Length: 324
Image (tube, rainbow, N blue to C red; front, side):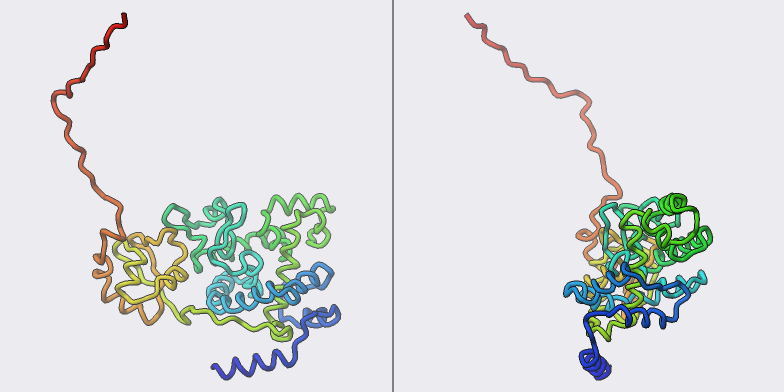
């Protein structure tokens, strides 16, 4: 496997061009095997240029390529279950740059950037302990369901993506102002800047994920488990207990289970583990539960109230001297 990456890397550096020329971009976009339209225009070119020419963005693309290997199965399963185009798996690149802990200025959270109200409408739990907007599988299913609803209402994938970003009322208002034709590009100038930019960014994401090699961008290898699975916990647990007893790096557990806001897994909830550690946990769950419980699980379930005395304590009084 290592030799394959070396060969691919050498090939990339031998053939890449940093600048994406318009004619080349048009040809490449036309060759993408997609259901959703991927048209070329200046806005799309600008987004592609930012991915390919800016040093920081090129590094971000390398990181996103590495993260995509970890997340893509969950994205594709959710989209496939709803019968949606698989190119939508690259939408989280636009929404969160594939950062599970991404939080917008408006409080939208997770890979798909759900606000609290929308998350709860889609059946996601958001409490002080659990935030399912950060659950890879559950948030992806919710996103696919919402995208399907938006497409059924608007009949256009580019408009559905814009509505996913900015809300259906925002898109409907722009459509009314642009003459009522359900065409994203006709409504483009009537949309808020951050909403209208999401579609060119989405097209650019599909471009760069396909043609990164031609631009000399190398995927970053991240220390994430190649395979994982979930178990249901039968006692309230802390991720720190699991890490210590099952010999799993705590950082790995946090990456696998970002939905647990303070590192506590409530009873009856799922815990995602590296595949090779699943049987270890199953065999030692009771040990995990009791391991340094006073340290990790400090919430008291019962407290006693001190009894008050039958007679109130006598009040002390002091006499003030009279001033002469």
